Amino acid sequence: QVQLVESGGGLVQVGGSLGLSCVASGRTSSNDDAVAWFRQAPGKEREFVAAIRGRSNRPWNGDPAKGRFTINADNAKSTVNLYMNRLKPEDTAVYYCATDSVGDSIIGPYNVWGQGTQVTVSS
Image (cartoon, rainbow, N blue to C red; front, top):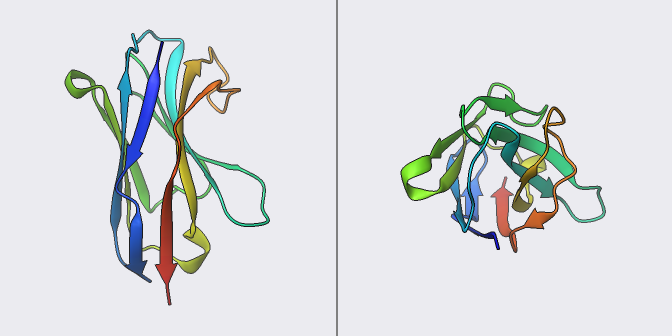
């Protein structure tokens, strides 16, 4: 059974940087698998941020990530990282990692989720 644990959230000032990590235990990777980051701000729908393929480590960036965030994987440590730069107040949200065998649909659906980590960007 796969379990995901996120870490690295916190408080950061506008324009700052933050790195999030997602450790996946019990996960085996294949080309159909992916690990994704989503976020949910108060009163808003959950939003796809970025994802990475299980075996190829090919990254995919959603609109929030383009030009500012980088996703990568350390397969030896079963860890997927999300590095966020030039943070804005609108990046404030709970960030979740998720994994599943998603095939061609990199945005999901995902059925295995972590507990989330809070990111707060202060102005």
